[in-house]
Image (cartoon, rainbow, N blue to C red; front, top):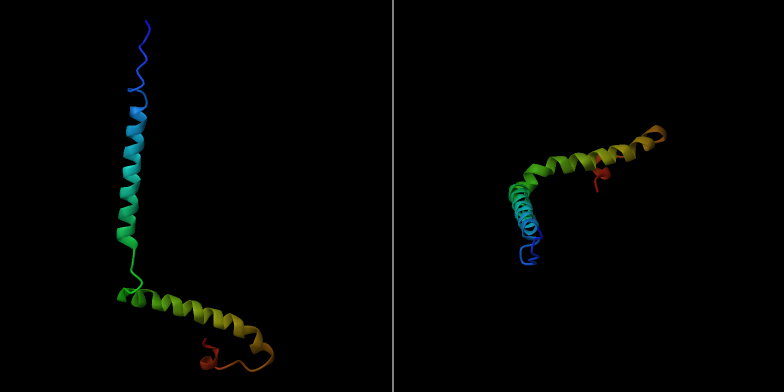
Length: 82
């Protein structure tokens, strides 16, 4: 019961599985990109993230001003902006 060696039939199932998996990953990456990407000039970027960015900068200014408030007068808010 010897099986004839045919190199043309070896590896095709693994190649098919690899191809299908690659196509699935490409489709997943494209779908995620399409649903989440915003162009830098998109007008919604300013509206969506402006409040969060301001909160980060305001929070950092408060932490920097806290030690100065103990010994001396704190700087006005207008001077604390970058």
